[in-house]
Image (cartoon, rainbow, N blue to C red):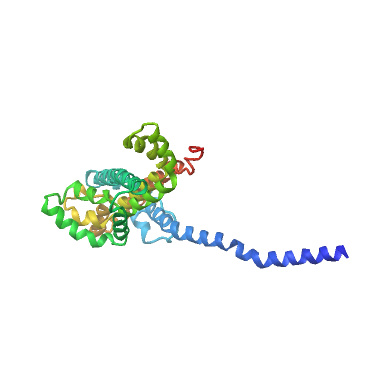
Length: 294
């Protein structure tokens, strides 16, 4: 009897496993499809960048070419190396803007999370409302404002609008609320630490993972930004890669050979972003404050 009961139980478990097994792999399959969807354009750009002008329109879409090194050499030599100038401008806009935005966001988020003052909730609600405003709506007013102050067609016209980012401040506030225990700050105040020292020595080290996240989001957003520099800048010597490659694309209508340079430049512009994520992901640590309060 015991053997019959055990066999029946085993069959039920097998049937249950058979029913749930397909659903068990569904999340993995969905993630795999999402990864393919996101990575396929990058893979296609890499393949297209390897093709010579003659191979670009005559070979299969997913067939590798033989002209990658020639394309890179021609791209670097185009207009006395203007690609390097655009890359340097992009690094200035993305690196400088992301650093400044991270600093402003971290300090603002910490203040909103850990201090009580009149109007705090109103300021936070305004920030939430700012998240809902598309950047394209602000581009023209920002251009008119910078033109009035004589800052249009300057590096500042691209850098300054990137510093104050409502979503980054929101992320910093949420992270500061979770990562910085109030008791840790109170212990520091009892020991005689001032508010500035508490922020610099206690709060900011605990917020490093959140600050890295904000920096990466802002760096990628500014690196890929097209509309703001396109509107603000007229001198192609100040263009970032996005606008510079766009001018090549427009010129490519009359010079088809430029298409290879555009694709090669697009692929090379992705490489720094990949390298940045690979090198900075080790700073994504959690529970840095574990054990800080006993």
